Amino acid sequence: MEVMEIVTMLVIGAVAGWLAGLVMKGGGFGLIGNIILGILGSVVGTFIGGFISGAVTLPFSGLLGTLIWAVIGAIVLLVVLGFLKKLFS
Image (cartoon, rainbow, N blue to C red; front, side, top):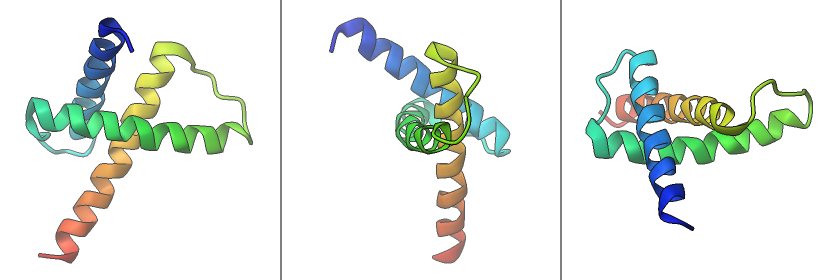
């Protein structure tokens, strides 16, 4: 993996985590937390997108599609984390 690919992945992860925090009415987890959330979210989002794309044609691809699926995955993670936080509190 080249340096530019890593930087792009981190930027997409940070933006996806930040956007997910805004959508979920949260303040996010700070820069590092947002990067981690976004990267994990992109993994979850890629899985969800791959599952859905077998049934329908997805309109977005490339960098925009990656960002959209990363945000969707990060939102899913935030919902799960919020549920677990309430469950164990």
